[in-house]
Length: 410
Image (tube, one colour):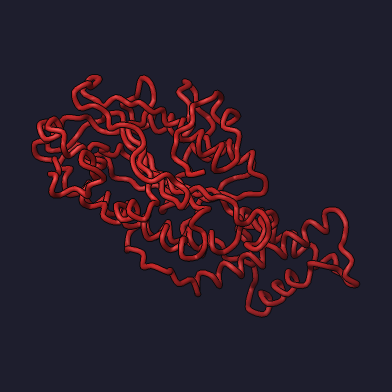
């Protein structure tokens, strides 16, 4: 029979956040292992491109003479772009994503935005993350969605000292911000190795009392949670030591975050939503080189992540979505950069996307205050992924109905 002293040791290890990460306790208690129902449900990975990505030099209307006129120094020529068709191509730095198009795994939604677009980074980002243009925004669309996904966990794959995004606010449980698998390490308060081994033994042997009959009430909950937490921590630490990607990942911050997501997905925690950011897209001056490098980082990291998980059997349950708070103005500025704009593309990567272009490229002659006009509200994309991918009622998350976008194969 578990003793009172052992119970107190176990319960204190769960209660003390410095000893056992609370999110790991909750995740371990709720999530099924990979072979059980619910562990192989659809997954959404959101990649935020912070700063306002220049959509016009990402998905490029290379055959439009107006493009060359508006971008005298920043333009990419017909011979440089990775052609999608005779009119549109991808920036030449995005070879890896272009190859995914050939693999029928890339969908490009053109001309995405929202009415009366804000030119403020902070306001526009809040609108995208909250999926609302209301004045006061306090909850995020993913946080709300998590209320409708029983027992699923979510992770913010964060850089050092990176705050959790508004998009995750409103979740029924706190979404953890993690930087590596070391964040899952079970930290036991112990004076020495002997004490540590004793505390671990308490956890390992506390699942059932003597005779194999489960205890009732709080004691049973503490026993099960502590045991599951320890088992999950041990499994993830082992995964961190043994995980061998099926394809090489580039050495970049985004690739490191996505590799961590791959480990968590393949580790069987039942996590279904991941959020990661890449900063640096506010390209007001000297845009050409830095923007090319950023697009290469996005392209190479997402491609490696998708191909790695595809080869592990997750191809048809994985969806990666990119967004930025706004695009850039159509005409380059005097500093060989671009200023804050509006309508821009979103990328969707997955085994069940409809490959190719969705919607027309925004007109370069029918501008609005120098900005590209959007024709697809970003909440239409969200609604489609909520209803048809995650199985979450979009109206309850977005507050109203939005016409779905034809981005998924039936």
